[in-house]
Image 1 (tube, helix red, strand yellow):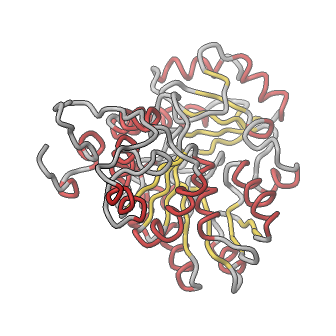
Image 2 (image 1 turned 180 degrees about the vertical axis):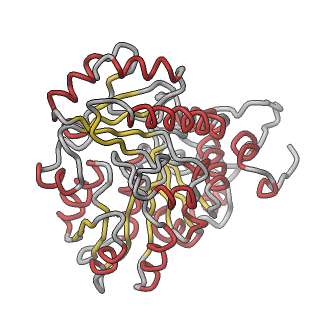
Length: 393
């Protein structure tokens, strides 16, 4: 295979072609390498591989050709130097924390993150002496006020889960760097097809590959993208030792998902905006959250920062949990599941699923009300999606 500089190509082409080094078999599709270990030509070669003096595969806990292909492809899409793949999105966030934090350090995190992310910082990093303050995602002054001399990084999701609030990445990057901190952005909802945080000043991007990168709800995986120094000094040593490894089969599945990422994300976004606009007109719907709506408080920022508005739509029903559950249970076609990023539309009640382990006070602070319903809008016919939701309105 020709030695191609994939930086010269557009995202759609990179997502299909990059990272594949054909073997002597001349395969057209990327192969899976289901091997735990690799054979060396000599004891000296083994020694040089293990110490990193000679490039090449060592052990599939931290080097595997299929996983490497996924890592190289995603790094290109995100405009980052390097990517490391992990067993799940939460494992990727864990790796950032374990690689960068020590006892006595401090983190500032947005309230509008996945419930398990909150618990990871509070219950587990907190157990080892790392303090976390949670702030309003869109309040830049609150972010800056929360920074302490021992703050190591700022962590956020944008758009947020599930209210689709938008953070100004460039502004927060400026604040972080002014105080000697890193900015970590979870880009799960947008993917690099819609938003590239590293080009806006972020230092680290994390992903749950389980979501849109796969796009079909097939496998669990995660990734961290950053510059060479952060990866080599902080994240790679943790992966090599900690072993939160992505399997070759899952990497192969994600590579397949990336091939259709650009076209899927556009179709997802088109359906989501149409659904959000329709929901705004429905009696019984008190509020609709989607960045594509002119009523969204960060609509202008979303237009500036993202190429499209994303595929998550949340809406609030005045009747609280009873009305939300009734609507969810009335659907026939839509899947009742807390997963998202699937070609199949999914629906969930965040207060009792994704954010159900948070305290009522923490949910209230994050704006997760009992009447809130979250829809991950899939690729079915939009009229069928509307009709299914209308059964419970």
